[in-house]
Length: 327
Length: 183
Image 1 (spheres, rainbow over the protein chains, first blue to last red):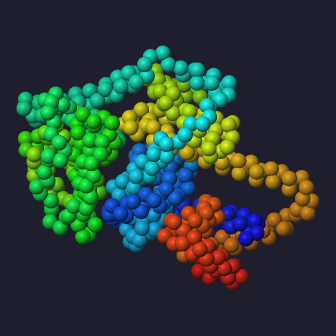
Image 2 (cartoon, each protein chain N blue to C red):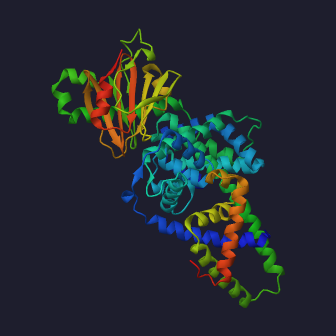
Image 3 (spheres, one colour):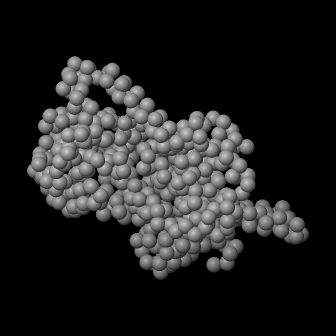
């Protein structure tokens, strides 16, 4: 094709896309029917996302991995109409995955984006260092202006802990159960629920009495809802995962994590923005449960192991599963 | 100047965090950008722009769980690196424009008007295409995606993607010759 035709198509295509994005910006996301994807579809989706231009990938990752606001995404990427682009992309990807009248469920988008991010970080980690940067004098000067005097890690941890303690104090102050029940308060302190504006960190704190922790495989799953069969089991780095699927491609993931290794894991951080976290009693142990779209999540700690169940099942079923995990 | 303003409003803990991220990541960031940009000054520009963004948004970064901070910064770097590539393309176009402004004596308003009308007509033809074909035009011409990538995205072969591209252009031509009203 002659270069001129390509230039004209670029210009005209660009104008058409702009108009399309303007239309998409007005799309009511809340009224869209959302459909969860199977594991295989999530992998396909991740593959498709990684083929998209970097700007589009950035929008999806900032939204679904880091929960940035639309204005935050625009600022970060120096882009315009991020809402229109996000809607356009989600509609486009839903179509590419073969969904006709529905868009991909938010939880599935998040899972796929996290897979993409994992891939990007693998690439980043394996990148070879060939050159030593030679920054200009002016840039070095700017860096000097923010040079540190204190140990950086300690200062930040101090701030983070202050936030966590503040939230714990708030939680205690407003929880009547915890005020009246010593037993309940003790159980509460089995967990530190560190809540940031958009995420919650669940970390078991009961390592002291776990001198002889059990093997992850010692925990038995005694109940799985009808129709679900084991599709995959993986163990690595102190994490044991079981994945179950049913014939409608609905999934349940059970993950056992060694409590001692939790700080280095991604999996204990959950996006809990705009969700109500319910705390409940499972076999005398405090557990936390919440729902995102059609997906239920529950976390608790038993026998020195952090247990996580994530699945497209209802509240009663997920509680029953949790109650039926035994040594 | 912007950096000085940003530094002015950062707390000590935030400055420390920026330093911590810089110490840990800058060399790798530089090498990744250099591999894409093949220019030391551009790689430096990408890293400095990335850290400017990090400083501007350090509050958000500090609020992220620790394991997410590094990935967050890598995504910023990728975007800043692509911005430099885009700026390079624009610079080339700007040079072309200067050249024509000084040398093209045949330029006249009437010719420009005809071009504008033709483009509007073509735009109406593109808008008349079905959604999947419009998306194809966007992938190929707006985002400069290779046929190989488009093929992967659409789960078809590269050859099939090329043929689909030709078919869409042929259809556009037929719309255009028919007056742009064939939707």
